[in-house]
Amino acid sequence: MYAQLIKSEATVENPKKLREFQARIDAGEKIEPKDWMPEGYRKTLIRQISQHAHSEIVGQLPEGNWITRAPTLQRKVILLAKVQDEAGHGLYLYCAAETLGASRDELNQMLLDGRMKYSSIFNYPTLTWADMGTVGWLVDGAAIMNQVPLQRTSYGPYARAMIRICKEESFHQRQGFDIMMKMANGTLEQKRMAQDALNRFWYPSLMMFGPSDSDSQHSAQSMAWKIKINTNDELRQKFVDQTVPQAEYLGLTIPDENLKWNEKKKRYDFTDPDWSEFYDVINGNGPCNVERLNARKKAWENGKWVRDGLLAHVQKTTSKTVTVE
Ligand code: BYC
Image (cartoon, rainbow, N blue to C red; front, side, top):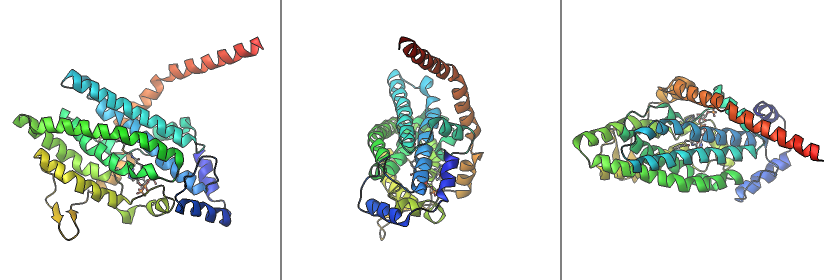
């Protein structure tokens, strides 16, 4: 399917249809699965939605790591619910990608063999309980900043999936901040752990928004099609402006000596992440890339008996129906 999409993009499309399509986008209309759409639009959506779906699924791993070690029963139940929510988000998004003609099995295969990406952030380890707070506060906070505008994205099934996802992400962000409040106001050792987690997750969180606008290959076309509503740098800036006062409230220090309020621009100046690290991570060389993909491969292999059982059941019930007829 993906190969077909790439091939068909090269076919020349009817200029009149292209103009009419762009006029619908410009008028703020939603595009629905059965509507005509340029192949590039379909291909871009499949790429972005699937990368997002894969991120939700792989994103369960760093937090799943802490379910058995949560400090209290209440924290365990909350974390379990959050991780389950991420699985649900992945499913809504795979369904949205399927409405574009993609096959879920093939998308999964492309994740497993490295042809498709997932968010860079999940290639970093979660070393302490404070990381659960930081992931909720910063990672879900960055996800919300990126995803709230996507509720207005031009493709109907994607926009509708985002509405529900954003509601749940908002709960996730609050649970993370709640953990941070406890840690930051706890013992000296707890506060130290909270600061250490912030130090490790700050720049990887800024990388979640993608490369700077000057290096973003897809932004211009995606924004013209309203697949993206804001540029990567716009969202990164909004995230910094929102997060700095929260860190101050927690009594924690953002690990950036150049972070400073710019009165003229009414926003914070800050240091960009190390982009060579970002490209290393998205090209498979981050601290946990191999571990994450191996976990997904193992889960796929371990689930074979379930898929086989379901298929056998369908075949049995189908043949029964045939016998009855
Ligand atoms: N990680 O032209 P660009 C979550 C790739 S949160 C990996 O700017 P685009 C969650 C990009 O794919 C995370 N790869 O791309 C939270 C492209 O490579 P390809 C998921 C990245 O698409 C908590 C290349 O770099 N959220 O799910 O216009 C718990 C050039 O970039 C990253 C979404 O996916 C990255 N950080 O903009 C659990 C939101 N950044 O594909 C789960 C939807 C860039 O050409 N996605 N790349 O090989 C988006 O909004 C956009 O796809 C992005 C990138 C802003 C991420």
